[in-house]
Amino acid sequence: MGIATTKSFADINEGTQIEVEVADATFDEDGRFGPAVELSLDVQKPSAHAGDSVLSTFSLSQPRRSKVRDLRADGLDDEAIAAVLENKNFSFETIDDPEVPKLGGALLRIVRACYDADARAVKKLLEECDTFEELADALIGRRFVATTRKDKNEYTRIDGKGEFYRVVKDAPVPDRDDPAKAAQRPQTDAPEWEDIPF
Image (tube, rainbow, N blue to C red; front, side, top):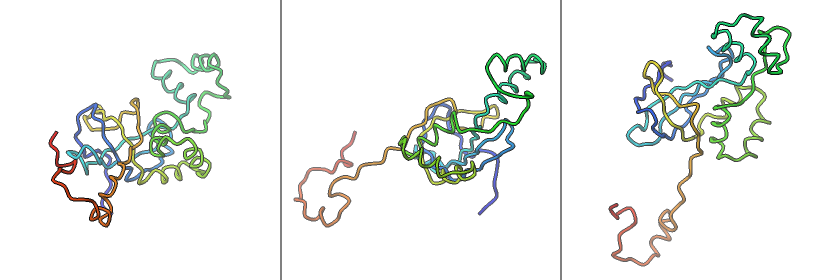
C-alpha cells in the first residue's frame, strides 16, 4: 500500500493541460477552508509526465461561511459581517451557524468531466450517493483533463479556476484491432497511418 504523502510529486509547468486518473479521493469534513475532497491524481498524458502524481483539494460550497471567512480576513467585526450577510439575503441565527455543504464549483465541474459531461449520468450518480465519502469513492478510477498551476510552495496542483474536460476515447481503427479481419485485408505497399511522418 505504501506511505501517504501530502505533497505532489509532479513538477509540471503552470498552464500545462494534462489528462489525469483519480487514484484516490478523500472527503475531509474539517478541511482548512471547510469541507473538501482531496484528489490524488495520476498523470496519464502528456507522456513526459505519465506516472507523476498531483494532489489537489477542492472545497465544497458553503457560501455563507466562505463569505464570513473572507469578511473577517478583511478586518470586519461580527456586527458588520451580519449586516453584509443580511444584505445578501443569507438566513442565519448567528454568523457562524453550521451550513450544509453542497457540491459546486470546481469539484462539480470535475464530476461532470469524469462522467463524460453526461447530465443523466451525473444526476444518477448524485441520486445514488448519500454522502460525500460515497461521491469521493465514485471518482476513483475516473479520468479528466485539467490545467496545472503552481501553489505558493511551487508544488504542481490542478487549477480549480480553469476548465475541466472529459477524456475523449480513441475510436478503434476498423479491422486493425481485429487480427482475423486484418489478415483478410489486401496487402499493399502503402504505409499504415502511424508510419507516415508528420
